[in-house]
Structures are given as C-alpha cells and as structure tokens.
Image: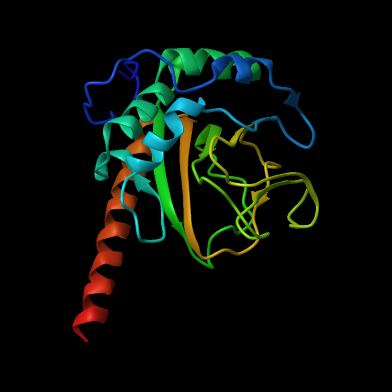
Length: 228
C-alpha cells in the first residue's frame, strides 16, 4: 500500500504490497547525470514476467490528457504497479540517487493513454514539482514522433538524450528552471505514467480539481459534437 503521505491511493486490488514489478536494483546502479540538469535513465525498469499483464490491465483511455489515478478504472496488475510506485522502497532508491529525503513530500500519479498534436511542447514542469518520474508502457514504438528529449535549451534539436516510450523505459529528473524536455509531434496511443514528489498538498488538491474539470469539459464537447 502507499506510504502515509500520499494524496492519491490506488484502488484495492488484493495484490501484495511487495515490490516485485520494479527493478529497483537496476535503478540503483543506473548512471546519474547532472548536465544540463539532474536525471537518471533506465531502459528496462519492469520485470519481463509482468509486462503483458500491465498492458492488459491498463485503463481504457481514448482521449488526450493526463488523468489522476483516482478517476480511472484498471485491472489488478496495473493497480500493483501503481502501488509499487507509491512504495517507500521506490522512494528510498530515488531519494538516494538525488540526495533527497523524499518521505517528507506528498506524491501524485497521473496516467496518459493518448497523444495528440498539441502534446510534447517544450517545458520544464511546474515549480511545485520536485522530482518527476516518467514510465512508459508501450510494447513497441516506430517513427520519430513521441520520443521524449531532454534538452539543453528551449530548442528541440538541442538534446542530450532521447527516449523512445517503449515498455519499461524510465526517466527521472529533478525539476528546475533548466529541466527542458519535449518531443516531436505524435498522434495516437501512447501509454505512460507520470509520478511526482511535490512540495505541497495544496498543489495536489488544485491539480485534482483541474484534471476533473478538464475531463468533464472534454466529455461534454465530445457529446455535443456527436449530437450535432
């Protein structure tokens, strides 16, 4: 189960709380980069025996946008994955890499299942975010679009790393005013999780409200277009 300072709690799945899907040993051994900002990359963070079940149990998302975990329905394997990201074991390994005591900070998990042409714009993340974790869950990937680039500047061609959003690809970075990232346009299915340690519970509440209002408006626009 998530540790006590989480603001979102995964649905009960009956799965064990033990960390078995995440390859924490591989993360612990991964190279730490500090130029142009602090980040870690792991190319295969999920253990092979769980991958198919995670994809099968992924929430059904057919719209653009990020969705808070509490607003989604999903199967037990995906629920277990979410629980492991909330675990104190994962927080301890990430905290060790970034020299932070993450146990004191609230956490947030959002899910994306679909990408449109407006996604991928260059940004640094909100100032309320301390550490951003991006975990991709796509069985394969073709083409240049949708591959996240970690940038030296606000230019997409000025990148230090490019990550295809394939199953188990993991990016963790410390947010600051230079943590530029983005990707070339892509439209279609693109499954990912974003997990954050943030600096206030107030930010969490505002984000939940914003996501729910945005989701409602998107559904309303879809219904109006259909009825018209």
